[in-house]
Length: 389
Image: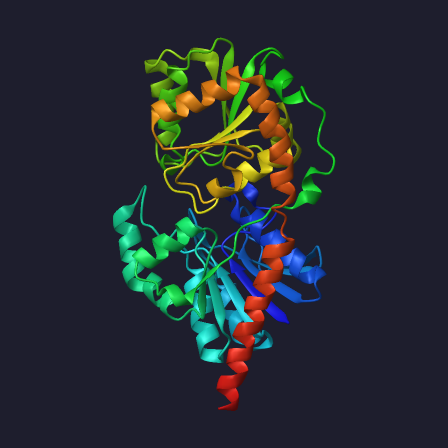
């Protein structure tokens, strides 16, 4: 099959979080299964025109961005590409929601009769910042983008429920979990490197959060939980890019108010080897999100044999519960209790370390990509039947 993937960000622009990593993994696995894949995406940080590269067997079309505001970019080359080439493809898959590339691709797919799957990356629910702007987007572009999709992909039962509650017909939703690229964890860095870099002693217990420093991740709850943790010698590391919404500054004020001092470390974003080094050195990885369609970092922690504590608002929760870690309500007391239990019970940590590795092996991309390929074939079959009629 010839498959077009449209995403507002793609490797190597990994500062936008999980989407570029996920879309790259899916695209490359589809190529390995004999498909031809093209990714249409935006490029950040320079003024060159459209650039076409091949990465891992995938044709990647990087569009010049005239303007960028968070995930929204203006890419004049997109119209030119879609006019000329969209008819080449059997199916398309659009990732994300609050951007302009997706609606533009949707328009040209509809005009050319190319069916598209839509994967909202957990963005459907208008929560967090800029609620008024998000509601305007829903009204002007979002509803049409969803309505004309041949199907909408949900990565967990939780996300599926959110979509149904928001008016997406259940029969149009395809459930496909996320996966993890196990190749990234075949050769882990030796332990101790991250701790030495940040002055964290070998005897200290290290709690780690990895992700965007934004309100939806529940880090204010995590700080309150950590402040009341009755365990000496624990450090909390918050690793991830901040956004210009004042949330990191709020967290820093909360650290001061709670008297946590240097017990909390903000590292900024970590990628590649630096991120792996942090995971390897962690005793527990924490994901206390208010809303998380899946939560790949919990699976990445499992690949490193690190137990996790995740909130019950994370789609990944059923995959790790009592196998790789603990699932708790998003409440400071519940998070605190789970952290204390893991830190103080060595036997429990060892059981979860063993379970984490087994859980990670079961969460590779092989099954979900095969499922996705089957979904594309269904969409292509429906297209051919419509043409024949």
